[in-house]
Length: 194
Image (cartoon, rainbow, N blue to C red; front, side, top):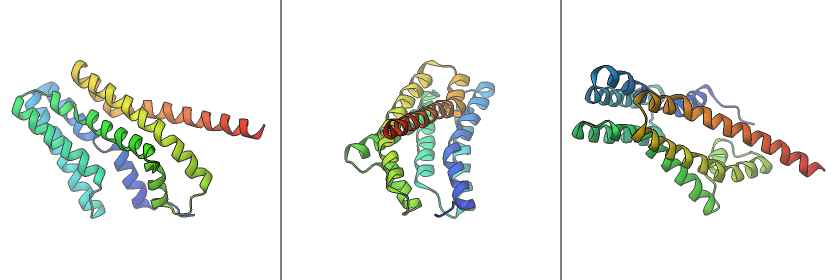
């Protein structure tokens, strides 16, 4: 079985934490200097993420491109309108797109999680692929919930609460979901053995 390389682990961490720096930069700078400078800071950190990945890995992943194109485009709208709401909608749109991809890939019976796992390691056992296939749709709905919550946070919450949701809250909710998946899997396996 192939073990993940150091480069793969670094990319996975970048995928998990990508997009957080622009959010944190926006929140901190916006509090002290206003929406315009907060947006500029967030956009600069987005460009920094692109440059870092290009220098570190010689290639920028599609997820990083998409995330930071959203940061730059919505940041541009925020600068134009002098309203931070556009910048704050980036996480919601990003999560909604992931939800749509996961759900639609389940509907057409080509689950994204299975495809990604097989690309990473073509020798993954069939039972593991089956688990990923069934989890794919549920994870899509979790991302849809997160995108809805992120939209609500962008529109009605304070900048600090919105930044907390994006930087920590999303990971807490995903961790709770994964814990539920593990409990469900264990219960399901016990039921099959009886």
